[in-house]
Length: 366
Image 1 (tube, rainbow, N blue to C red):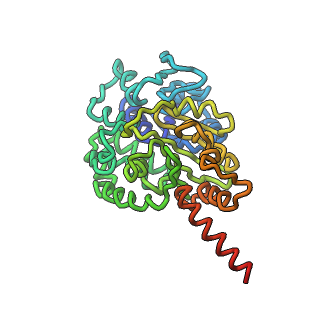
Image 2 (image 1 turned 90 degrees about the vertical axis):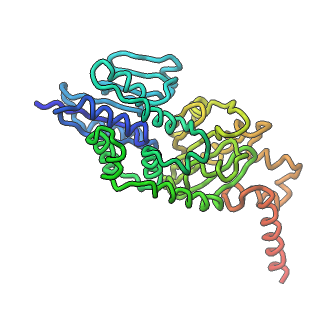
Image 3 (image 1 turned 30 degrees about the vertical axis):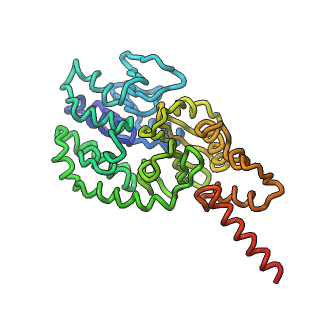
């Protein structure tokens, strides 16, 4: 009976690198299977995947940079868990530290007594990408480091299980020779130049609401991440909404760490306390999750209250001008335009609403 290593990993840079490190260090002559998991994956699907493994007593289930499962042999993660809390937990089955910069960094410490130690040079870049601790916005859209090229490729590509598995296996088989791995994957710095072009396309999609920007996109990755900060440096928080099914929306939240004001909201903690979310995850400056379509506006209002000056919801913010929307059709229509993304801000929406209503009035009088 052969031992099988079942390697579950989050399909981002941290998860991919962690899976490649484990494969390169622990799995020698044993059989293995790779399971990339997305943030937008359903918990029910995760359960079905674990069940499909048909784990034998000799098998080893390792989960890297993703939520734990009761069947796991080893779980390594740095995402804050509401159930566990702030204190690190380290034992034979769990390596959890919400203060760590990445799961790859935790895995490296785990591997030290039993395998090679990976260099800080690329682990530092994993930490940078994972925590979005870039030196500047310019670095995001200009840095041609191999991991930045890989990050840009993943962001732009249609996400498939085979793609993530191949990347993990290529990094492992080349012993983390990134130049060779990217060449064999047919990737180069042209990806970065394409990313720069996509920034321009983002301008038309941004809606500004005081301190935060909102982008609604038909698919995940349609617009480059952080493009809104690059376009409008005054934006402090960004919210991305991506439709993933008929009634479910995947959201991403980022704090503009290049902003001149500090982030006083722990995004990960904030999301963990919103009871109507289907799923949520995050750190101090970043977060994501899934929400039912019916609760999207409710979520936006909650985020406005926490992110915007004065603690007003989107509805209340629009009421600051002192207009009673119940009796003002222009204000009512304008609010609807902002929420649906038809207009970028309330001032623009009011102008459009006014012209629209005047046109309707003229047509009715004819």
